[in-house]
Length: 418
Ligand code: SF4
Image 1: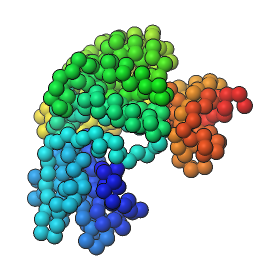
Image 2 (image 1 turned 60 degrees about the vertical axis):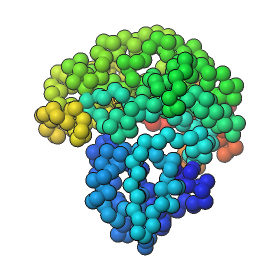
Image 3 (image 1 turned 90 degrees about the horizontal axis):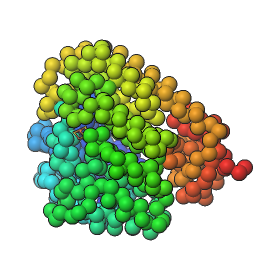
């Protein structure tokens, strides 16, 4: 949206309180994020620039748009999760006397992607598919973002070619479930291409340095994909494979469609092919009916797999999902106890894994300044952040770095031959 508006002559404001237009792009996955939006919107309405126009869009509006349109009469524009590319046109339609609500599902064109405003000049996200058909019982995404739909290979390859022509080196393919790539395509024309085939085509770009993807559903992760990650030198050695629970009972109620044993089997086989693969996961604690034994199975799994990163959450029901009909029988204090216990374990594992890097050499693509703004930072093949004391002209370069220090989140390195 930022790219689209900049290309239409809009300028970015330095603060939301100085802006003529404030756009909220909402996420509905977690309740706390949704609650914060309404408070922040009220704040902008009261303390923002005189006459400020607020636009509200994304997943929350896709599900609750009509209700919010009625309730927040000071918001002149409500748009959905699949028509953000129309933001400039929608903004033009609003006037003193006209409010706009547009929740249509319409797929954006290649031009929208080519105009994207990107934080890095060397690493780019490229959306290959959107939506989800999996209906995990706790998840609002299929309702908020609609069913699976893939961008055509012609469009994906054209976008990547354009990025590489402009000097980008690393591409991260994005999709709710990348393994479903190709069923169906946005233009309704079926093609003989699936996700592994798409990867192979992208890997042929000679200017590409590294390729990653998120997210892969464990039920669909297969040997073919594991072989590509293990054998193709441009594939990053990192994989996000969200398990959600270590208990088969809970996985069943979550409608995840795999067992713990199947999940672990896939990881064991991947690690046989590629021992240094860095894994990350999502896990939910306190799902309805999760017993102490179920909880301990999840903790066990964290310890067994030893993920580099775990995104761990306590369960909160989302209205409209199947799990919201289950009895939310675990008190919030107990959910928090389980969550905090698991977080402590994961933190220790993350710290140990990071400390194992000290003394190793990693190939790092530097793509910007670090948080302090004094050093530069980049990522290695395992998606570890590496910071170095280099001048800015190293940004965009790949350097073999000897890691001499680090903590859970950041490694520090010097050039290998220094
Ligand atoms: S796979 Fe499940 S958790 Fe992931 S987006 Fe789809 S429904 Fe949600």
